[in-house]
Every structure is written in structure tokens, then in C-alpha cells.
Length: 200
Image (cartoon, rainbow, N blue to C red; front, side):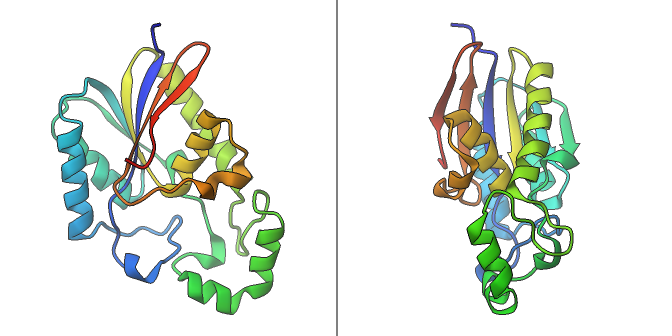
């Protein structure tokens, strides 16, 4: 069966400050040396794939990742703000410990309604994120009909795409692990979706 697309869905490499378990969201941070090495290894892993395009979030941790992967492929790279990580409002840049200490009531609200909860300070809900990501992802796939592509994005963005591909409710998105520098492979057919690899 002829497939519509193969998507190599990548999470950016390790970021500065990772050891504190920060919530970066839209905050721009760079890759560590390990993160760069992870993406160099990813570039090698994808070296022989026949890519037509590379799409990336416009945040530095993803743009750096996309450029490293593109070294072996003479294809266009598109940097799209719609592929950014979830926006966490007042929680941006804080650690999980900070959030637990300073926002216990808000965390309880989030637990009570994971998909629709928005962090204070104009944060996005998971439902908001999914609407944003699914709209741009559908557009990319339609424009890239018949092509193999890379998407270099973020943990929550990837989970939204994987939930849709697997037919999972968004409330279960954190049941899917996305390590720094991981690879997911999804094949899309006219009448079916085949997830070949998760968090590889």
C-alpha cells in the first residue's frame, strides 16, 4: 500500500539546566554538549533516509537540532512557531519543585482537569496545545503528500501527535515517554496509521 507520509518525529537534545527538571515551555534555552552529540548521532542515524523536508519549532533547542540533522540532506528547513512546546505562563523557567511549593492549589486544579487546565499567566491547556499542533501537522502532511519528513519538536508536542496516531485520549499523553534526543517513526496511509517506533 502506498503511504502518504513517513514522519520521523524527534525530540530536541538535552537542554541547559536539565538536571533541575525545569519547565521551559516557550522559554528559549540552548542544547548542552550532550544535546548536540545526541543530535549528531540522530543525524547519522537518519543519514540514508530520503527526506524531502525538515520542520522544526522556532525555539533554539529545536532549530539547532534540525540544522544538525540537515547536514546530510540538501532539503529545505521550515521553522514554525506552531510547533513550539506548550506555553506554561507563570511557571516558565521554574522547576517542578518550585511549582509544587508555590502553586499547590493550581497543581490540584491541574490534576482535577489535566486536559483543560491552563497555568496562571496566560498558559496553554493541553487541549489548546493539541488544537495548535494538530492544525499545523495536518497542513504539513497535506503539503508533503507522498514524502518522508522530519519534525524536530518538543516532548508535549510529540505526545500530542503520538496520542492522535495511537488513538489515545490526551489525558494519557504522559503515559508516553519522550527522552531528550529520541526518535519516533509514524507511517500514514490513506486508511490507516502505523506507529513503527516510540522513544527510540
